[in-house]
Image 1: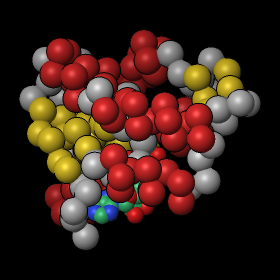
Image 2: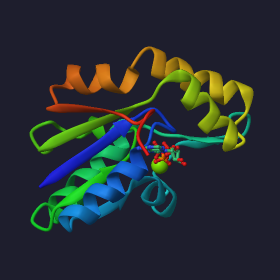
Image 3: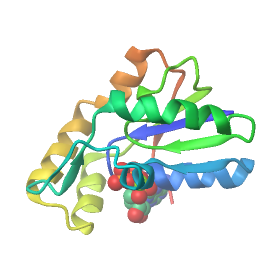
Length: 148
Ligand SMILES: Nc1ncnc2c1ncn2[C@@H]1O[C@H](COP(=O)(O)OP(=O)(O)OP(=O)(O)O)[C@@H](O)[C@H]1O
Ligand SMILES: [Mg+2]
């Protein structure tokens, strides 16, 4: 079983991914940690304090790694996980969140005004959801605004 969890930063991917992994006894794949450990980023944007990632390059790394964990079951935590081929992914969860709640969450993290604006914009346009659907994933939407 291969489950991809995508969504705008702060919408609850990690929370959901860990919950699903624990519930089913699947492995939890921390893509951000892999990106750092294997230097899978192009450069670091100092102004935005963020790593610039080439999704194609990332996916080249993730495909064999994901396949090797299919038998055990794996939950992939990344806002780029929907770039994996739909033929490989059994289920693709997209986490979403109301804008007022999301803004509060991102503020709490100390993100810059620019970074908060960029992420809110991505959520307004449902960028991850739209892409995941366009790529042909079997999408399940999870709104985390009101949950505990
Ligand atoms: N289902 C939920 N109900 C209530 N609060 C939630 C829920 N999921 C996440 N949160 C809150 O939102 C915050 C961000 O969640 P989380 O770290 O899981 O997001 P993320 O999508 O993994 O973010 P990033 O992309 O930056 O890693 C958490 O600190 C938590 O307080
Ligand atoms: Mg996370």
